[in-house]
Image 1 (cartoon, rainbow, N blue to C red):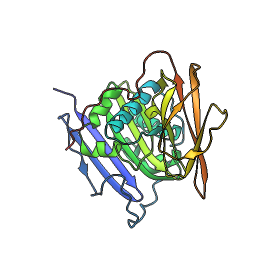
Image 2: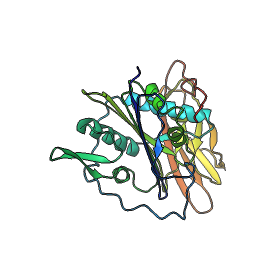
Image 3: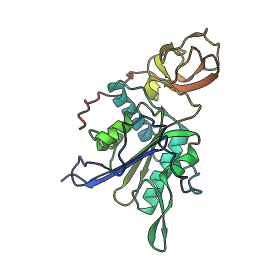
Length: 303
C-alpha cells in the first residue's frame, strides 16, 4: 500500500481566500474548498480586504537550507510544467524562499501540518499566527500569494507528483497571476521525515526577469529571457557592462551571454511613458549539455 498523501493549499488574491485540505490513503486525494472561489489569478476588486492577519513576531528568522539543490530542482520542475502549459516561468526569490523554509522547519520541529503557524502551549498545539501574516513578514507589498504543502516525499519529483493531476493544486501552481516563488525543504528524524512548502506570489513594484525558465545552469551562452509587465521599451546588459540600445519591449527575448564559463548576470531596464524599472537574473555557464526545459513533462490530466 502506498503511503498516505496529505495536501494542503491556501490562496489569497486581493482579498479572496480559499482553503482546502485532504487526508487520504489514496495517492489522489480530493481537496475540499472551505470557501468557493473563481479561477486562480482572477482578481475581484469588489471583494472586501481580508481581516488583518494575526502578527507573527517569530517569523522573521533565516532558516538554513537543508538541500538547496532540492529546492532549486522543484522550482525547475514547476516551471517545466508551466512551460508545457504555455505559462511564463516563476522567479525564485530570497524572500519567499525564507518564508517557505521557516514554515517547513517550524512544522518539522513542532510536529504539526497546517498552513497557519502553531506552538505547543501547556502540552497542546495552539495557533500563534495566520499563514498570510507569516508570509507578509518576509514578503511585504504582496497583492497575491499561494501556499501549497506536502510531506513525506523523498525527491522534488515526488513532491510535484503529490500535487500533480489535482485541480486545485495544479491551478495554483499554473496561475498566471503569480510571478515569484520560493520553496522550502526540511528533513525530520521522525515520520513523515520530509516537509515541503512552496510559497508563490506577486508584489507591488516587482517585475522579474528570468533566464531559461529559472534553470540554475546552462551549457550554451544563447539563452532566453522572460520579462514581466507591459512596457514600451527595454534594454539589456551582461555583468554590468555596456547597455544595448533601447528596443521595443517583448516579454520573451533571445540573448547571448559572455562565452566565459561561470556565473553571469543579465540586467534589464524596462520603461514606458511614466516609469522606468530594472530587474536582473543570474545563471551559471558550464560545459556539457543542459536543455531549456529540465525534463520531459507529462500531460496534465487534472479533473
